[in-house]
Length: 492
Image (tube, helix red, strand yellow):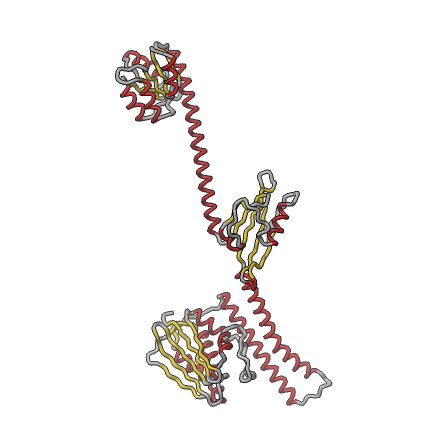
C-alpha cells in the first residue's frame, strides 16, 4: 500500500473497465475520480489538479487526445497516460507531442497499470520538485533584485558621495553626490577615471590596486576642492574583498566637511581673540607689579597707589571678560539655569536707572521715559532681562556726550513688547554697525579710545533675546546717536 495517496483521474466510456480499474487502484491506496466521457473528463481534469490521468483514446463524444490537450493546457504537470485498444505509431507520436507520459495498450493487466502509475508518480514528483526549485530560485532572484533596488535607492539618496572601482580601476558604481562633489558629469560605468579624480584620491586608489598583497585598512584624505574654503571634502577609501580574501575593488566614500572646517576656523579665530583680550590686561598688571617690585626704581606712595588702582581696573576688566566668556559657553551648552517668572519691564528699567544714577549724573545726561499704559507682563528670567537692560543703558551712558539725552520708550505691537532705548552719543559708522554683535568687537575711533569694555556684552544680549524668540535691531548715525529696539514676545 502506498503511504501517500496520489489523485488519479480515469476517463473511459467503458463502464466495466472504468469501475474495475477504480477498485484496483483504491485497493492499492490511490484516490480515484472517474469520468464516463471526454467532456466530463475535461471538466474534472481542468477544475482541479490530479497527479495522473488515465485517458481512453477512443470515446463517442470526443477524442482522448483532445482531453489530454485540454488538461495539459491548464495543469501541465498532470501526468497523462493514454489507454487504447487501437494503438498505432502515428497516435503514439501525437500523444507524446501533446504531453502524454506513456502509452498503455488495452487490455492491460493490473501489474502493467500499477507499474505505469508508479513511473508516472515518480515523474510527477520530479516535476513538482523542479517546479519548486524554479519557484524558489525565482523568489530568490526577485528578492536579490528587490534588495539591490532598495540598496540602490538608499545609496543614491544619501548625501555622502559613493564611488566603487573594480580591481582594474574602472568605475562599477557611483551616486549623484559623488558626481556633484567631484564634478564628473558624463561619467560612464566601466570607465577608467583615476586621472579625472583629485590626485589625493587617485594616489590612494593606485596604492590599493598596485599592491601585491591586499591592504586591509582604510585611508582618509581631506581635500579642498573649491578655493577659499567653499568646498572641503573627506574621502575615505576602503578595500572590497572577495570571499577568498583577494581584492575585488575599492570603495570611496566622499563626505562634505565644509561646515566642519568653517567651525574649526571660527574656533581658531575665537581662541586667538580670547588669548589677545586676556593677554593685554595681564601684561599691563604684570608691568605695574614689576615696577613696584623693582628696588632700583624709587616710587612715591601716591605713584604706588596709582599703579595699584590701575591694576585693579585692569583685573576687573579681566574678570568681566572671563565671566562673559563663561556666560557665552553656558548659552552654547544650554546649561545656564533659568527661573521663568512674570516680569514688569517698567520696574526693571526704573531699578536699573537707579543703579546707574551716579554715572548718569556725572555726565549730566537727561533721561526721558515714555511708557504706554497697561503694559503686559512678560515671562522671562529676571537676571537675564536685567542684564539686557543694564548692558544697553550702560552703553547709552558710556557712549553718550556730556549733557546728552537718553530716551526710553515702552510700547506693544502685535505679539511683541517693544523696548526702544535711544541716545544722543557718538554713534557708529556703517562698517562698525555691521559687526556690532560679533564677539570682541568694539568700535575703535578717537571718541572710544578711553571707554572700557569686553566686546562681549552685546553678543550676550543678542543671544539672550533670540533664545526667547525675540529680536534686536540697531539704528545708528556717526556723531548723532544710536537706537536699540528690542522686540520681546509677550506670549513666551
